[in-house]
Image (cartoon, rainbow, N blue to C red; front, side, top):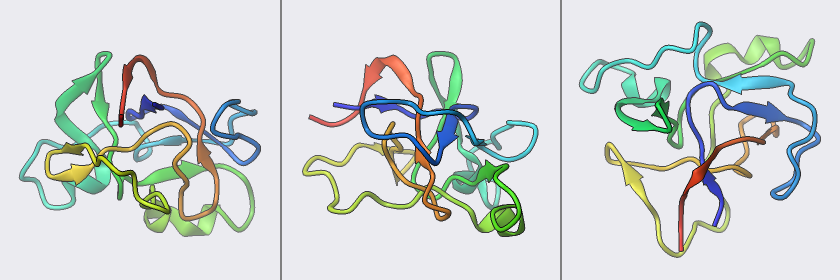
Length: 123
């Protein structure tokens, strides 16, 4: 079971599900702030009402910042965590959205490389 992803966790283009790889970006918008639930666009910026190890939860659709130039910088708010393929047998929902986990990919094909080691998602 992979660790839960949070706002501020690292992304890597060289990561695998088992090894983190060097960071190339982070989960969450620039500044790392999630929006309160009910705010338009809130799932895209994390779920602030659910804290995982003290940080807002990341879900499928949460925006990511990848600093790998040049092609990734132009993605801006369209670079997001995408649903796992195939989808997990037991989906965990946070704020009505599928929870993001270490090993999940983003639009730019980077991988969530860190997560909360004490909170495991799936089963």
